[in-house]
Amino acid sequence: MWGRRGLSCAARVLLGVPRAAGGWTSGRRPLQPVNVIFRNLDTAADCSLSYKELKGLLKSRTTLIDVREKWEIGQFGKIPGSVNIPLGEVVEALQMNPKDFKERYNQDMPAKSDHLVFSCMAGVRSKKALDIAMSLGFSRVQHYAGGLEEWAKYESPEKKQSR
Image (cartoon, rainbow, N blue to C red; front, side):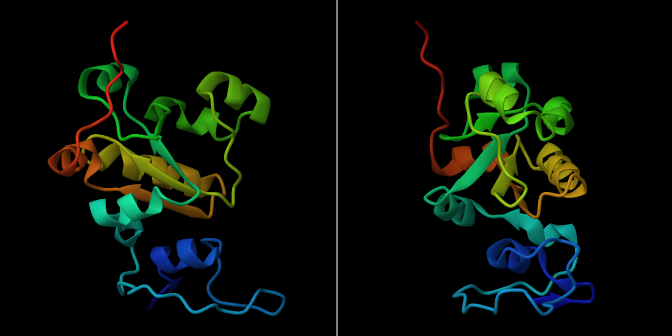
């Protein structure tokens, strides 16, 4: 749970502690028991999720953002419930006016304290999106390292039906 630089990413996400925090200070809520096994990693690698972890999170109020290009969504499908924001639009999208965000992506603008999970085809672009979100002050971010390639081994991707 604790690494050389403080709480691991997984612990910060589950406990709602901002990334820059190195521990608890007065005025913060007390630690709550959490039934999770924390990996003792202190790099961004511990911000990655497995298929099983992602599947469990999708049942909660987690926003899943697919950072692949629109043509990739059309050709390969997507993880059900994900919103498509191509990697090249992530910086702009996460700083948009909430009304503009809703209009463009047909979803409410996530707050900096909301739990965001990024996905792509194989984990490279989602890791870049995670880094961008953290640099913009989003404190509860993770990425699905296996991406759609791993998801498709367990479940069929959601594809748009032709009209």
